[in-house]
Image (cartoon, rainbow, N blue to C red; front, side, top):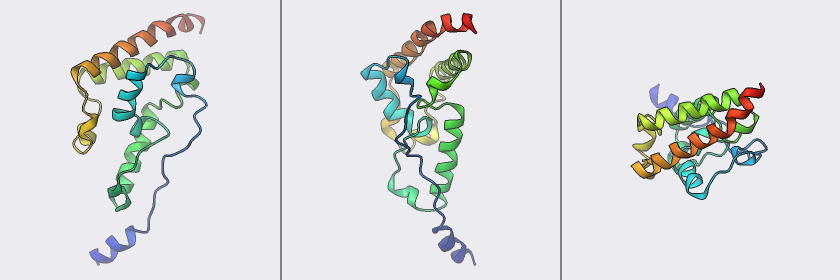
Length: 147
């Protein structure tokens, strides 16, 4: 019976997170330097954007279902491709979370870096990401006063 369930679940295919549309991308309103973009692409965007890279093993269920749930959860928390649509207050809050989680080594998640070794951030990369996020917060502050 278990074997039948394992075979049947292989026919369940979650929708892929791969929309090419990015009208509200963070880069549409704030500068994203090349070095920051490299960090975001290797350590953040799989779960926090509308473009996920899917490794071969996500074609095996229930791994694919688990990963898609994880991606959906990550996008609910922060989506860099939707960042421009957030209010200034929400943008500030999300950047606070980015800074705090990177400082505490809570992001990228250990379950992600266990498989994606290239996503492990060096101290220099963490500092670059934090410095960039703090700089964006300074840009956002005037908009907070207008809300």
